[in-house]
Length: 325
Image (cartoon, rainbow, N blue to C red; front, side):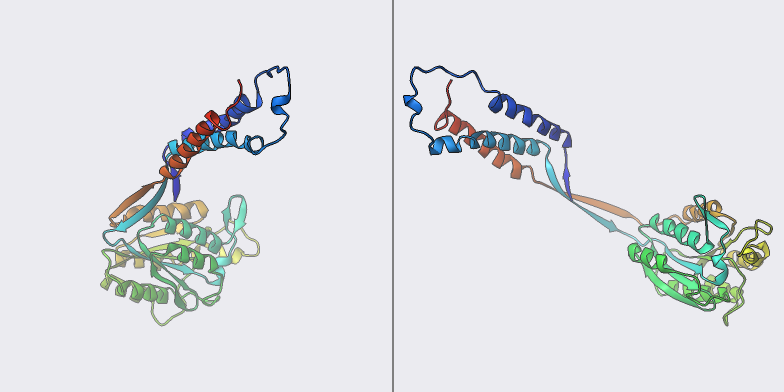
């Protein structure tokens, strides 16, 4: 990346038009001659090329000013000296996640839309941890395996939509099992699952508590997040998804207790953001990061040509293009 160490010097570039006006536009009063014989020869190569002399001066001054600003080519190298935390994000994409009981600004938004946005913020705040994504509905599958390529993870997160894992049921146990399998494939000092759902498990061959026991055996900590407005918060087209008892809070609490995690309840966008911020604080990354900055000085590429042009201007002004008075 190209950068300037002392960019304040570039302010002097604004003075160059004034220098040009004073030196070359505001000419001194003409000299009176008794005869025009001395200029009767007409135009010559000197008179034609004379306007180039002030351009040499201005170009030289401009390059010298750029040299004073010290342009540098900087390269930043980040070295992660130890592993961070491995985190699998499990996201419910069943039909009930389409309920419009959350907001973005003053606009109604579905639970899934807000969940995607909050999870993206969470991912961006953990640049040195491996993160992955599991989506679940009637079935569960890995959308993105554990990776440090968070840009790709965010791209796939934006593509998550209602019903992509089956719209009618919720397989919480299967989601935990898939996330646990991914975490078990890699070594890390800490392994975490953050599971977000608005329903109760009613699909899959593995129950949520069986999956929680397996996760505990693998040393995986599970944070569960139940989302949805409380009962009586509103009606409308999606009123059937707004009942507080739709979230199986008891099971989600048992999963969290079994694995040493915590259960959280989000009833609006603000509380969901606060929950992921809390998890972010609870799971402090153990990654040790060293950043090396390499700087290559480029000022000489402006200094040398600037001196040459300015010296050429002086030489020509004193010799071939010397002017009177």
